[in-house]
Image (cartoon, rainbow over all chains, first blue to last red; front, side, top):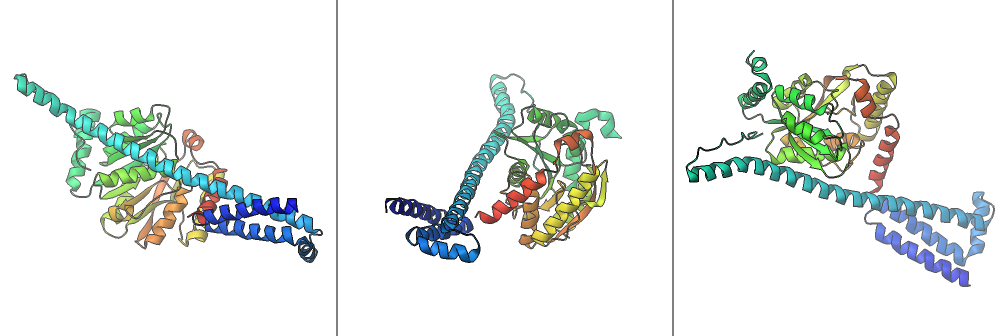
Length: 138
Length: 247
């Protein structure tokens, strides 16, 4: 009974995790949810697992449960991989934003430097420095 | 010729003048680069001589490629970390759009591509016949390519045909052209090599006209060492499969 309650709690948490992940990764989330429900079913009705196992050619009910658990674990790992890819997308957006901003700032500094020097020198009456040629519009 | 007599600075001035003579056809070549300090300078200079503006996206290089590109006359943006060619291309496309480019072309940094082929890519875009032009080694030539690379090109074309329906002779060529309208429909999310399949997929789904253009790619020991490996095909397949599972 203790083992059944423990497994029920674990599988319920797995099912909740799958439900939360299903919006971002519907196929994986759905598959994990189905596997979790199956797992819960077999935890409380193990004799059915044996009946099903015999009919699908696995042999023992406990083996069927083990295989289901392996599938659930692999799907959970796949889901983690997909979550990491989502994080990588956020990193990419950030790195891109910084790269573009820095390039535009450097471009603005180069174009602005000549004007600043020119203005300064004009103010003192000294000969105006040449403004660095801008690359022009694309 | 005046350009050759005036030296490099003169060629750059002449290149800018050529761009202005083209008038409103403002064309930008986007070159993603990762550790290409050996080749990026000559590549940028050659593209500038052909009359195009150049945006180089340095993808976290550690060999001074960004400085070499800048010294050669390119507009350079730098990724702080290495993300992949797809990410660098998307950054370059966004920069070109922000800077008002009407046409955007993509070009490799390793010296495999010929600047002459840029005009072949531009012609259908300028004539309004297509919003996307795709360079094709199948229709053109692969000079110095080993047999494994030729087979890989065919395999990639077959895979792309199977997944997107696009009957391409070359699905993974870095030489591409697009109008501003086309570029606005591209949003690459695949950071690494799978972006080549992704861009084809987005081009097809955009519904905008596209066509293949014969181009010549020259393979050298340097470019073969730096370029795609045969094992990259497995990674591309995994990335494409993962994208199908991920929203």
